[in-house]
Amino acid sequence: MGKIEMTTPLVEMDGDEMTRILWKMIKDELLLPYIDLKTEYYDLGLEYRNETNDKVTHDSAEATKKYGVAVKCATITPNAARMTEYNLKEMWKSPNGTIRAALDGTVFRTPIIVKGIEPCVKNWEKPITLARHAYGDVYKNSEIKVPGAGKAELVFTAKDGTEIRETIHEFTGAGIIQGIHNTDESITSFAKACFNYALDTKQDLWFATKDTISKKYDHNFKDIFQDIYEKEYDDKFKAAGIEYFYTLIDDAVARVMKAKGGFIWACKNYDGDVMSDMVSSAFGSLAMMTSVLVSPSGVYEYEAAHGTVQRHYYKHLKGEETSTNSVATIFAWTGALRKRGELDGNEELMQFADRLEKATVQTIEGGKMTKDLALITSLKDVTVLNSEDFIKAIRETFDRL
Ligand code: NAP
Ligand code: MG
Image (cartoon, rainbow, N blue to C red):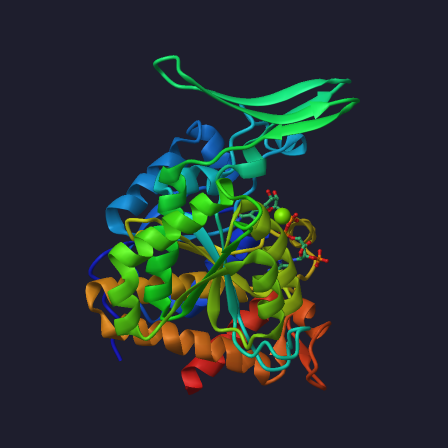
């Protein structure tokens, strides 16, 4: 049988440490034997980012805009320790942050469900996808520690000098104040990315804020979502048989715990920070969590939600055996290949992605897995495989399907 042809390249963003090792194994064992793989390759490994003064990251984001679909390996976000370890010229910014800013994108995280790795919440049968607004609010705040009695005011000065003034509080003693903001532009991008992704994946979309208490700030989020929904998405949602559902954040939390899953939960920045950790840990493992960055114009970048698994990499460097889970990275590839297939009308490529995902899930359900999953599975008598043998086991399952 010939290899599957591709018409448009995928943007391939290579990365760091253990995930870079897995990246090559996945390509060699699971992709290159079956696909005439076309990619435009960008090396986002820290060494090359440093060599190019991080230009390579910006270039990869531009290429993503051009081609529409990218797949990314986990990358190191430099800190003080990495400055010395890699002898860096500068503490380069997080590539994910750079790419997200360039694409004006929203990140959607979805757990991969397999039998034998059960979520802590018994009634969650299907994945819950979490969308976090990644701009503003408390993450871009200004704070003052109030020393003593005095008046705190909120002042907006327009370009022409006119002021809007609101008293926050008349302090009689020490206290604290905080100023936060968001922009209609950013909320609009977030809303559009959420509506598009819901249509794309044919899932209901939930959005929640605390608009009963925050009658201007949170209400503005609710209004923008509602307005865009009515103007641009109502008909499309009805045609797709899906729903947009707004409620209060506390009500949403209560409903999520009782739900079966199978929907997208859009959250404001802070809610998304907190809830994504709750949802992902309740589903079992960070190594089983996929992530896709979606821009309001419909550009996609797929990756694993976890990092470069540094501890395993150092073991690997010492020549010790590792048992690192490659599932989320494999699903980043299948997500990107399926989307590429969809955009190019390449049925074979889409079927390949489905089959590789099925083979991955079946391998685990058949009792072959990496150590992280063996520690939490409800399956009996499982075989713990090393990083490479796990990928080879998936290939065997794939060839049998
Ligand atoms: P991490 O790479 O996610 O790993 C943390 C721990 O989680 C690992 O030590 C391992 O636990 C477990 N783990 C995560 N992924 C696993 C997998 N695929 N298979 C098996 N176990 C897995 O986070 P980190 O160690 O805090 O960060 C390492 C580097 O990744 C940092 O430089 C950070 O900047 C970067 N990072 C990048 C991204 C990204 O590119 N999207 C995201 C997060 C972090 P055990 O050690 O107990 O086995
Ligand atoms: Mg967090």
